[in-house]
Image (cartoon, rainbow over all chains, first blue to last red; front, side, top):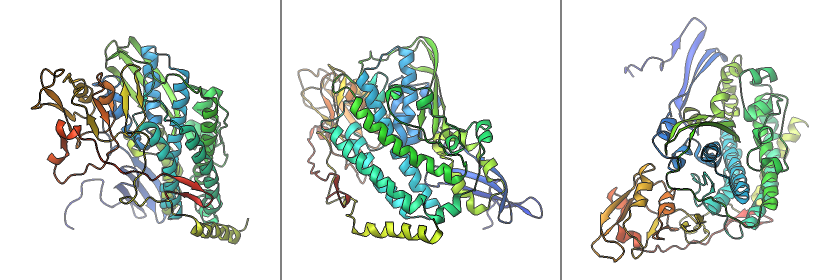
Length: 377
Length: 165
């Protein structure tokens, strides 16, 4: 073990008491990530997250591909939330090209993105379970996730990277008999996630480990610019689906879940409550959806936009997800910028971990709903 | 609620699951059933037909060698190459047809959307593994073969939980 490690990767002693510890770079069920933690005994003095290990240059790549060919690679940062990460891009391109989307396509998109939110959240929850050493909570969500993957597979033809949304609607119509299958599986799933309460959310061991750890106050949540479940767990009622309804969200019946505690427990509970709302949205959208009609506007090959710049945002599984597209009268966008929820939630981590025990680090880290690949893009 | 009650409830919830049916699919013996015969696209209406995006199916009597599928793939995976085929077709003057490298293909199906002649579809075949990289390159003759699939397992929801049968 005489090989010299690169600077910043070895254990360092900064003074008599404080020790710098590198947690990672490793792959905690999501993507490579490193936390540089300074500890005094068992207590964290400072934490410096070090993202960037999975940077793929998605935004630069988007400048060399046309509006349609961008679709398969732009969903790669979050492959299991691929409908939601494409949603703002597709909405923005529609603004640039001036496309009016058929009514049925809007409902199909909402259903696809809500199913996808559940797929993402269940995966997140499974990893949260295994982070806390709760292996039942790893098995159950991973199994129940199959219900939604099955539905999305019927809908889009792929299990994870769907490439389903396109400017002008969706790629294909729903298969025959989809509504019955969807309702049956969503009804079953609602009963199923109610059981998570007994084994996980009401479990005294989980509560003891996560309650009052990593408390983010309401003012800090707003000041640091966090979004999504982190913001809503700190008592701020902010959901893009309610605040800036896109597509048909304004006509659907659902509520946002807000908790006041702001600790890791509240942050882990909000996505679970959101899944129940997602089930409500899916059921409502299926009943309000026009039973027939086109789902896609036919575009010209290599469509060009004008001199425009648009910014659209949606609520993804991790919070507000914005997409800024600049068009310069070419088939390719001049610039595509993704503003992702993961990166904005990460900024809260140093504040949350200060003064915590090192053992609480995984539960606080993963409760931020942070996805390294998306943050690095 | 006290700590003891909470732990007992959690354990009880787990114990009740012992009577549940197994959810997992016994994969090589059982295979999931998909809708239809794979993803298709209707160039007249501009809307696709739902189905699994698996291995492609190439219809030699429709392909004109126009290369639109290869152009569609250029910015995505560059998996499609146009190659010479020995047989001649009336509609295919240059006798070139797509050859697909499944080591690169991402199964997005944009090539199917690009084909205006109903020549390229996707099929339900997803078991494409090979020992060599060359084995992943499918020639037009291989793409012509309709895959044999036996997929029949579906999620069934019973009062003893969801199962694949």
